[in-house]
Amino acid sequence: MNESNGVKTLLEDIAKALVDTPASVAVNEVAGEHATVFELRVAESDLGKVIGKQGRTARSLRTLLTAVGTKMNRRFTLEILE
Image (cartoon, rainbow, N blue to C red):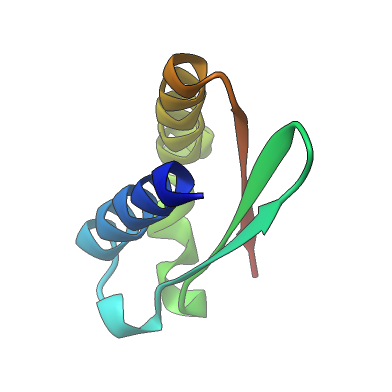
């Protein structure tokens, strides 16, 4: 589980860099048998910053998780919670 801890930290750091209130960033890791789901929670006012215009930032984060997962033979998914 140590490897996905690094992914969780990476996701947390990126999210904190994007938002105005980094203290409100929380990443919850839900590990399944074949996939790990990361639930990203930010302040309501920062939701737009994490999603981005037309979902571009969120898509980029998901692409990054897919690339990391490919290297680790794991599947990572990202859910942005309101």
